[in-house]
Amino acid sequence: METSTFVERRKRLREMVPDGAILILGQAEASRNYPANTYPFRQDSHFSYLTGVSAADLALLILPDGQEALLGPAEDPDDLVWHGPHPLLADHARDAGIRATGDVAALGTRVAELRAKGLKIHYLPPYRGERALKLAAVLGKSADEAAAGASRELARAVVGMRSIKTDREVAEIEKALEVSATMYETAFLLVGEGRTEAEVAGAMQGVALSFDCQQSFAPIVSVHGEVLHNTSYAGTMRAGELLLIDSGVEAAGTLYCSDITRTLPVSGKFLPEQRALYEVVLAAHDAAIALASPKVSNRDLHFAAARAIAAGLKDVGLMRGSTDDAVAAGAHALFFPHGIGHMLGLDVHDMEDLGDVVGYPEGEPRSKQFGLAFLRLAKSLSPGFVVTIEPGIYFVPALIDRWMNEKKHEAFICYDKVERFRAFGGIRLEDDLLVTAGGHRVLGPQIPITVAEVEEAMRRA
Ligand SMILES: [Mn+2]
Image (cartoon, rainbow, N blue to C red):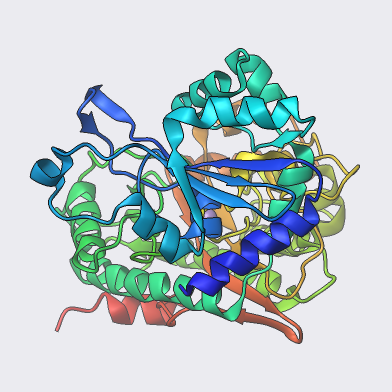
């Protein structure tokens, strides 16, 4: 992205948080099993948003008078041996449009000087041990005190800015989606009886890497789609099973994410009951998308999907009674226990490190009802929001048993029939959506999603 983009973003942030200094920590390397063996480096999203710089151990200071400084570690002459020619701190500062640089080792001293002048230090809550310890050291507080002192004002300002995506940001998300489309094309052709989940996960990761993209989270590639955050790839696919694939990548260089889910019949053809429930999930997906436009609450999109699921499950004979009453009571959550989706941007769950200030209006806390409690975004939609739409139907044996024993929502759930679906697994369908002034646009290339499209995409020549 252009240097001017980052200059402009920092200027706006300073205007929104005019009192005090703003400190944004870049990411440090994180060790796996000994200090020098690290996880792949991933810049902090806020730092990337404000500087575009991808290097470890940096810090950004923005002062109320407009002064800015990029602080980094002193160059070790041996770095050239291990890392070859690479951009120096001054190069990063120039690319980010920041005039001053300094030694990050002196960050604590600089912060102390600013506080001595009576300036408040605004910083965001830490989400990694390394960041918590760094903040504690810089502020001269305990890690708990440092975390508790994070600035809500700064978090609100960052959320205000990052929630609205520019055309340039949307273009980056769509670059990630182009890669996702190729990954799913590969998966559609590979999935089949006797193949392993690991083969599919590996082939998809290979496609991502071939575009120089990292995945935006550990993908789910599982015949146990009912396990919502399943990251085991140990299974071998058998005919008659469904394979759920939830994956995404980060656009090379800019880190903007994609997040897509498809559910495939291992044999290439849906069985009649699979097809019936797949159509219900697709109807829920379409109903939520159809409703997406400015000023509509994302909670209403969630309820539109929930109603479509309850109505569809009545047709299949798994639910009964009034659809509206069933959804109001939360009975559908036996099958659809999570929210309709979340914001998407530089994080796959965009800005989730900042908490519910991202997804909930001030003074409007999350519902405590099972299912609705997991809705990550309940705000009214605005043009420029990018959100995921990801309804699903799952049969979670342990949850079925618990509810059945409690006779929970018996008026709405046909437990005798649900019993027969215990081994069904799960179906989820997810697309990424831009809210526009006139409504919405589904982002990226079209990835097969209807029954006919999926079966066609899986057909071997
Ligand atoms: Mn998602």
